Amino acid sequence: MSVSTHVLDSVLGQPAVGIEVLLFAGDEVLAEGVTDQDGRCRLTEQPTAAGPHRLVFATGAWFAEQGREAFYPEVTLTFSVTEPADHHHVPLLLAPFAYSTYRGS
Image 1 (tube, rainbow, N blue to C red):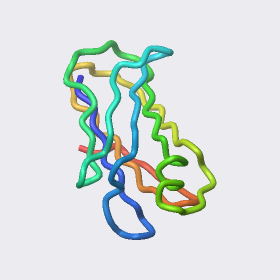
Image 2: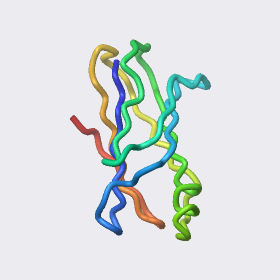
Image 3: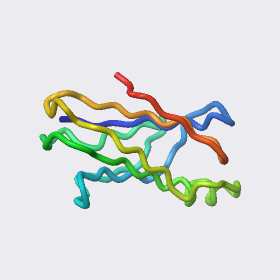
């Protein structure tokens, strides 16, 4: 299974560069990364088991670095892996007081 994400700052209408992201399966950290200049982060190409996984985004620290107030110190997205061989792309649309997500391709 491969996992990637793409974070967009929906207030400024641009990629969210420099957000730290952790990928978990249960309590185990499988991978970590930081969003690049395009707001993208590919976390793993390694196989993993089926079941629930979590992406944890360090949004509070990122907003603080920009001098912007934010309500969520972190965003956690939990998703199910049913086909471990598939690619899982989990985007995050981010604002200081709201966020949304969807299953990407």
